[in-house]
Image 1: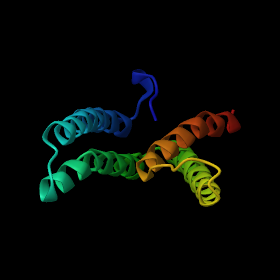
Image 2 (image 1 turned 45 degrees about the vertical axis):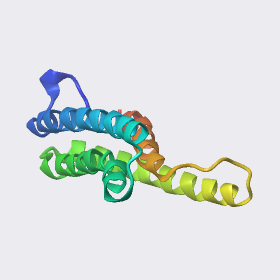
Image 3 (image 1 turned 90 degrees about the vertical axis):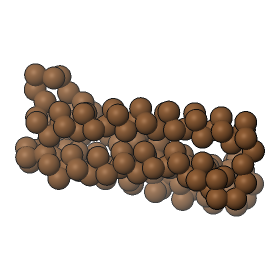
Image 4 (image 1 turned 180 degrees about the vertical axis):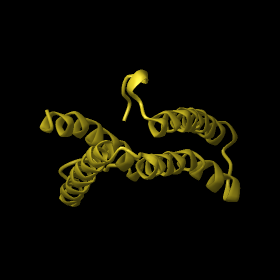
Length: 136
């Protein structure tokens, strides 16, 4: 999704303006919630709130990715992004499904569910240059 600033569409620029603050918020909230849980040993609703807090900026990032997809007026760029996202989704679903069966057989360690989105992002990121290469 990130290209040279000169060639970025207005939608891509808006994406970056939204994305980086959301990721900054994620890092800040993640470290703060981990520290607070360890330092305060909260219970009840406070523990629930601190535990779920890092998910909120990630949900915002997912929404920001969707907004970029909707706002991008260049149909070719949008098509390449959709293809990369589909590859990311496919790799993530297939990988997590296979990992789950391996977990059931005690062959691999447990994969926390919060790792699913980073796996998707990595797979989508790896797919983007391949999708781009296809059209050269």
